Length: 138
Image (tube, rainbow, N blue to C red; front, side):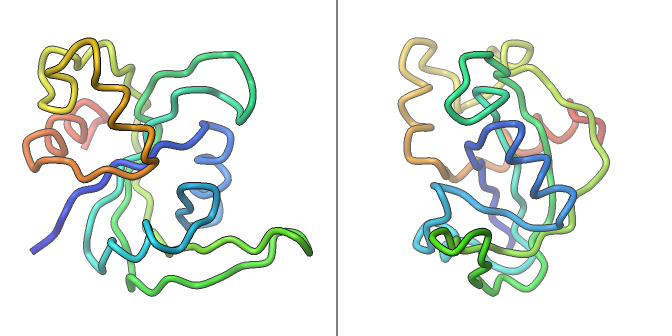
């Protein structure tokens, strides 16, 4: 049975992953990715356009299905060798979280929902996954 995940990553980094067919979360940590299995689904939420930047994005920016579920390392720089998963990303449109606030279980706590996202990877309910996926054009 598939599970549904929400990764919290800047839009710029999401687009790198989409173009390369991979997922990274939590600054390349292995443990969070190890929860995700083959045929699970991943949606990315991007609070900002760039890591460390100030320009807000606040949108769901990509959606894909996990390929093998095998977590592996990839050397991006001699001092940065993050963990990754291979993902089949689907063509979609970006959707502002504000347009779905009243429809998602994730955002039912209007004041504190963002605190859940600080973990970098959270499991989504099936309802929320389908609501976001439909809004993204799937």
